[in-house]
Image 1 (tube, one colour):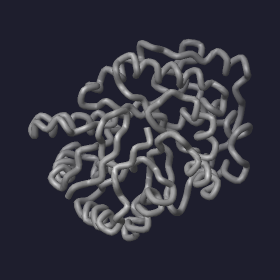
Image 2 (cartoon, rainbow, N blue to C red; image 1 turned 90 degrees about the horizontal axis):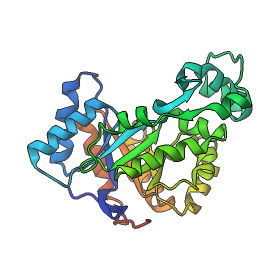
Image 3 (cartoon, rainbow, N blue to C red; image 1 turned 120 degrees about the vertical axis):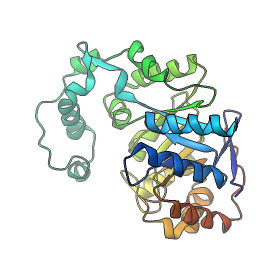
Image 4 (cartoon, one colour; image 1 turned 30 degrees about the horizontal axis):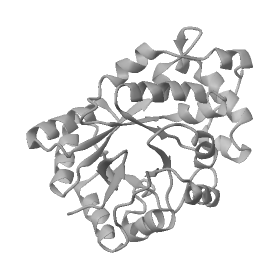
Length: 293
């Protein structure tokens, strides 16, 4: 099937970026599903793990198709230090700080279920967080920029860093990707909180969870922000963990026609998912290449 095309950083990508998430965790399950997507016309793939990257590179080699484009994933916390130790060693204090000062009270138990909150970070500790370029480039070097030109800088720490006022650390990571010739993408979880704060970042686009049923912290507010956003937005979890697959036409119309997102990262768990994903596309005549860069 011929899928709609978009332009991002002067590169042609598909507006459907496929994330292979087989029900089994066995490595061999990734490759057959990825091959099936390719056979159906998919050439843009999200690569959240090394196993995905390996399968993608094998597919690119076997098909000799230079149009295959990867979207890598770099966890923001992988290059953050506090007092010389990886920041995730202090995660309980980070979460306590975020829960107490940033997250709306009604969302605290939903985001951090069953957790009690103890000591918070001091301002001095927040100020002493620093970027480790060596560890960051170790992770970045895993992705061949020619075939994986787009790198999502994501994970829970992107939102947390914004909440702690350390957008400068995200800028360091973005600069590191650019120096290697890649195109960084901001990837967060809290749309209404993160998009306004992250907008000044010099990235190719912004990936954020948004679908017809939910977006943190408020769906209506998130929709209004995205409609007015003048930079490319990529929808994460567009089908609400698969619950909207049977309503794919309405889902695409909501995202592409109403919100005018640039593209979506769709999860494929089974071969049957592809039929549902493609069926909805055929019904939305307005799905044409979108140029928002």
